[in-house]
Structure formats: C-alpha cells, structure tokens
Length: 220
Ligand code: ADP
Image (cartoon, rainbow, N blue to C red; front, side):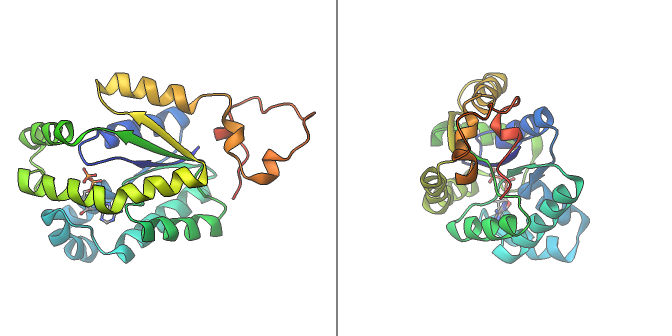
C-alpha cells in the first residue's frame, strides 16, 4: 500500500493515517510530526522550520522534500509501502514527490482525501489546542492554515483526481466511523483498475489478484 493523505488541518488525518498504516503494515510518514521532532530536538532543520510552523505557513519545500525522500528510501529498502501524511501540500510538492517516488518505483496507488468543513475543522483544532498545546493551534493561526489549505493544497486534490487515483471520504463523525469508511473504500476489490496501463491491459483470462490491487501491482 502506497498512499498519500490529503486533508485540511483539523480533519484528523494524523489519527487516520496511523490506523491505515497499521492496517496495511507500512510506515506512517507524517511531515508535521517529523518537523515537530526536529524542532523539539533543536536540530538545524528544526531551527530552519520553526518560524514558518509557528506562523501557520509552509516550511521551505527543500526541507520537506529531503525529509520525505529519505523516509521513502527507507520504506523502499524495507520492501514496504507507506502512508504519507501532510505531503504533498502544493502542486510543486506533488511534482517533486512524483519525481522522487518514480525514481525508486514507489509512486502512490491512492490519494486519500478527507473532507471536513472549515467550522468543524476549527472546532476540532481549538479542542486539540486545549489538550496538546500545539503552538500553531491558536485561532488566528488555524484560520491561516485553513486559508492556505484552500489556496494551495486543494489544487493537489484535483491533480490526483485527474490522475485517477483519488479516493474522497467524508471525514465527519467519530474517528472510528471515519476509519470504517476509509478502510471500506481501500479494501474494495475493484482496486486493480487504478493500476497503470500495463496492468490494465493484461489479458482478460488472467485471474484477478487474490489480494486487492492496492497490495499488489503498480510498480512505478
Ligand atoms: P496540519 O495539517 O494540521 O496543519 P501538520 O502536523 O500536518 O498539521 O503540519 C504542521 C505544520 O508543519 C504546517 O502548518 C507546516 O508549517 C509544516 N508542514 C507540514 N507538512 C508540510 C509540507 N508538506 N510542506 C511545508 N510545510 C509543512
């Protein structure tokens, strides 16, 4: 399973990504968590990223690209897929991740989009702020992150729809309800149709894969 997860801030993508990763036995690569880890440890990367993160802005592309490239190379070496959470967030990042992934035969099978409206997202983030004290969970920064999502990340969702790998799921309700909805979609046996042309054009006599297409095929 190689999946990218795209959702507005506050949609619960971290929770869902971790569950999907566990279900399919692949690493959960979360750019926000990786960056927060660097900030906590005071690494040069963390120092470079901190101001943007606290302001609800995107950190420079190069930083995130290298971090994701490294994590993806590890997944490749381990012979597994990935759940990529928080990347790509811009069209430029989508092009970059495609280049990196294609270079090592690791392009995504699925782009999962969780839909949550802005008011619900704000409500969830303010609730989280009380519990977790994330410095970017103040109302003004939250509004900025949402605006950025609509302006630069939504077009990435459309790009994946054009590519034919978009799965869009309603992200409202409890975390368990959303997980059930997501897994139902990801486990649909019809998935081989999302594979690239060589698989689509295999002879009709070939038996469908015993496991869903997401777990097989699609090598580039
Ligand atoms: P959320 O999606 O709720 O905003 P994340 O934990 O995914 O939270 O990201 C937190 C912050 O980390 C972002 O606001 C941004 O500053 C930075 N970040 C995460 N992913 C990226 C990315 N792909 N490109 C640039 N900045 C990123």
